Length: 209
Length: 54
Length: 233
Image (tube, rainbow over all chains, first blue to last red; front, top):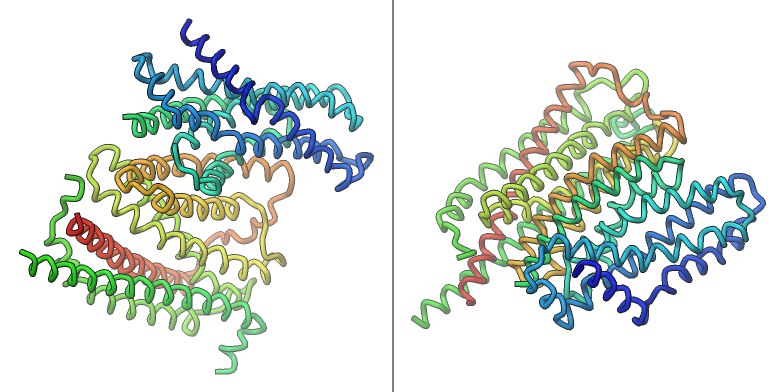
C-alpha cells in the first residue's frame, strides 16, 4: 500500500511542478515541428527520420528531466524521511522509477500517434514505433535515474551527466530506431533495470547517511 | 634520405601520424613531470613550515 | 584512516624512476628505427602501413589501461583499499591520451587505405565511446568536491563503463550488418610477416614502458598530493 501511495504522491508532485506532464509531450511536438523544415515529409524513407527524431527527443527529454527524480526530494529532506521509514530501499527506488516513467513517457506515447497522423505515417508503422518506445523508454528512464542519483545535490553536473548517459543510450537508440526489435529492447531494459537498481541504491546509501 | 621523407607518396600521412604521436606523448610527459616537480616543492615547503612550528 | 599510505613507497618509486626513463628512451629509439627504416613496405598498402606501428600499440594499450582501471575499481569494491582508487585515478588520463592517439593516427591511416577519414563501424565507434568513458571517469573527480565521495562514485562509474563497452560493440556490429557491407574487412591481414612483427612488438614494448613510466610519475604525484592534504589538516 505504501508503495502505491508513494507513486501517487510523486505523480501529484510532478503534476503541480513547473516541469510537469506537459513538458515531455510538448518537447516532442516542438522538436517535430522543426522536422518539416529540415526535410520534406513526402521524401522516401521519411519514416526512418521520423523514428530517429522521436528517439532523439525521448533521450533529450529524459536527460532534461532526470534531475527531478531524486534531486528535489533530496534538497528539501524528503528523501531522508522516506528512507528513514525503514522500507526496503530497492522498492523505494522502484517506485521512483515507475512514477518518473509514467510522468514522462506516457505523455510521449499518447502524442506519438497524433503527430504520426500529421506526417501521414501508416497505422502499422505507428503501432511498431509505439511498441518500441514502450519497451525502450523504460530502460532509458532507469539508466537516467541511476546516473542522476550519482551526483545528488550538485548544481554544476549537467554536461557531466550527459557524457555518462548518452553512451549508455546508444544500444537503445540503435535497436529502437532501426528495426522492429521489441524483444531485444525488452531484454536491454531488464538488464538496465537490474543494473540501475544496484547503482541507485548504492549511491543513495552514500548520499543519505 | 629523400626516399624516407617521400615514402612513395605516403609521406604526408606517415609523418603527420608519427609527428602527432610523438608530439602528444612528449607533451604529456613534460606536463606530468612538471606537475610532479611542482607538487614535491610544495610538499617540501609545507614540511619545513610544519617543522618550524613544532 | 582513509589516507594511511606507506611513505616508503614514494622513496622506492624515486629510486626506480630513472631506470624507467632510460629504458623508455632506448626502446623507443630502437622501435622507431625499425618502424621507419629497417622494415619492408606492405605489398598492398605500401608505405602507409608504417602508421600501424604507432597506431596499433596505442589502441591495444588504451584498451589495456581501461581494463586496468576497471579492475582496480572492482578491486576497490572488494578490498576497500584506497590504493586501488589511486591506481585508477592515475591511469585514466594516460589511457585517454592513448585513445586520442589511436583515433587520430587511425583516421590518418584510413584516408589512404579506405579513402575516408572515418567509418562508423564497431571498432571505431567503441574507441570513440571509450574516450568519453575516460572523460566521464576523470570528470567525476572534478565535479564531486568531496574526495571520499568522489572515490566511491568513480569506482561505480568505472565498473559501469566496463560492462557497457561490449554491449555497445555488439549493438553497433548488429547495426552494421543491417546498413552497410563490411568495407573494412581488407584491413584484417590474414597473417603478419615476421619482418613487420618485429617493429610492431618493439613499438608495443616501448609504449608499454612509456605507460609504466607515466603511470609511476602520476602515481607519485597523487601520493605527494595525499601527503600535502594530510599535512594541511
